[in-house]
Length: 418
Ligand code: LLP
Image (tube, helix red, strand yellow):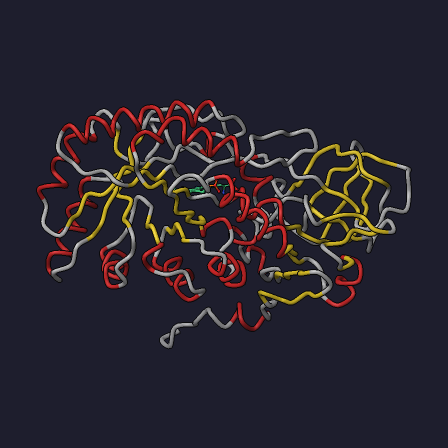
């Protein structure tokens, strides 16, 4: 992870010692590098510099206001999937004309909210949604700019739970059926057909599925043009993978941009790209403390104070995350099952992992937690949301404060008729 390194055997995020931070902020907490986020965004900008491109950061990956406002200041747009995310993006300074709205279940209220802000584009995922957008837009004499999300039936070679471009997935309209839906869209009041959208999955570690999808889209755009539609936008979605393990080598942003140019460049459309993980994934860690080391009959458990409620990826997708001591003070290693405090066997970060020998109160960092980490957390077991910290050079700030138990408990209401 860039900007996360060991200095004097102690992990640093930029110039700040994680051990020093942990004296100030009780674990568990998320910690991000400002510079790494900025560099990842600029690498996208650089990679797509030769193409007319709008980079719409996928807010779902990490929606903290500080991160959104940093990206907005660099010129990023936003890919959002709910009214809440539109509100977050606008509040952080993303202009409405750089917001694309994706998702299969946009409600009447959410569509009305997006229309009232005149967002750049709706990525429409079904015919009933199209009709509802038309109804709401025309009732207010507004025009909704739309792309239809086509489902190209391409295998993304990623985890089944994050594959979205196969015909059995709920997303998009089958590319084989989409031509007639475009025809229908063009006939509807309040709708301006401007583009085609595709997103085939997340954590793709090879470009071949993208190539298949982009080629299918290119062919489809030709058909639409022949049908008389004026297609000026191609939204290629997100999905570029990152390295989680030390020997992972996902394709870089330049190769991805080159591929987009090769497959789609001749169509002279503006490219919208919706990266999430590849902007924030490798910029953040989850810092946790060892509570106990417990020797079981068959296994040795490293019980830490972060749980599946803080980081659900290992439990949910069997995702691999590197785990490493914050202070390196021994070469002696042992095999551990690294587990959290939650009362479920699935609350396991890794099994039989070889780590330097650790003891109670030692700090560990779980790496590559910037994307789909804190945003997927919950208060299960009435554990509080972990705070988030942003580091830039030698400064750091809390960008999401720790809740109090009162904050959580107070939300429950005992009925007055009890
Ligand atoms: N655009 C759309 C329409 C999406 O559905 C997604 C992610 C993205 C863009 C951003 O994809 P990215 O560049 O981040 O791969 N929670 C899962 C990942 C779910 C991704 C959902 N959609 C995980 O932790 O692996």
